[in-house]
Image (cartoon, rainbow, N blue to C red; front, top):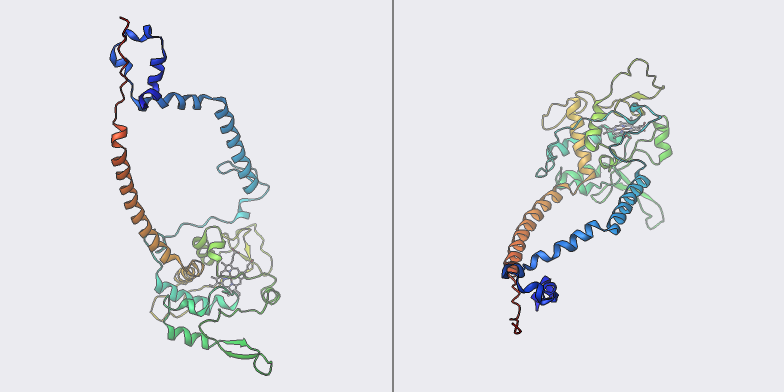
Length: 326
Ligand code: HEC
């Protein structure tokens, strides 16, 4: 039945005279060779050409609609390259590799830098005290730190709001009550919330590190407005935040020398953790998934070959009925 449907039908439908003299080998055909002509005609068809062209044009159109320009094609800018900011170097973060987790001692030091330096201006809205437990501090340490901060709670039975010491469930206290106060305290510039800053900036951790350590004097010819500071990594070059990290600014409890770059590295590691608290778990689960799925892939490849072997190796032979007339 199968032999009749594949290829062989064509031979048998020819007038008997044409096939009679042919050797058996020519009348024999492998089932797997019959699909190639269909594929070739698909490749050569005009419909394919038109639809592939339309698809390509559509993809390019949609990409430019979304992102404004095509990658790898230089554009004509009306602006200077410095408006984009200097590209940060790629730093060898200890959590960079696919098998690497965060350096938790560094997260702990980084929290100290955030608390003692950055928290004066920057909020960290999405991190609660409890998030630090087991990551950088013990429960008792975090409880003690939270209790040092007063939170408003209430209303109580008399309908009054009251202040109480912080607990594990409270979120990090913001330095300013609202945006207007934050701008007023920083000459009009708004210090952004740092919870997701590592994810929110092009260049991520590399950019924040480069920014914190990249303050230099403005080059000749560049004027920086009063109250602004020159930093080549900040798009535009003039940033509202002054240099905040200096050698020896913080005293680490583990004796790490508090150089400017060490402080920056630690606080960026801390901010990276704040933006991706699931990072360590994610990589661990990723490795488990890769191992499991590779094994499953190998097993399924083996089973596929096992099941298909008789079909792939079958040879279909058409044996024409003997011509009774001769
Ligand atoms: C004296 C207040 C102050 C302190 C302290 C401070 N910042 Fe800022 N920061 C600002 C202000 C203001 C801006 C907004 C600058 C602008 O938009 O021009 C800012 C912006 C930033 C930005 C965003 C830059 C961008 O690309 O938009 C980052 C990241 C940042 N600060 C990190 C830090 C870190 C980390 C610390 C602690 C080591 C810190 N800041 C300490 C005031 C401060």
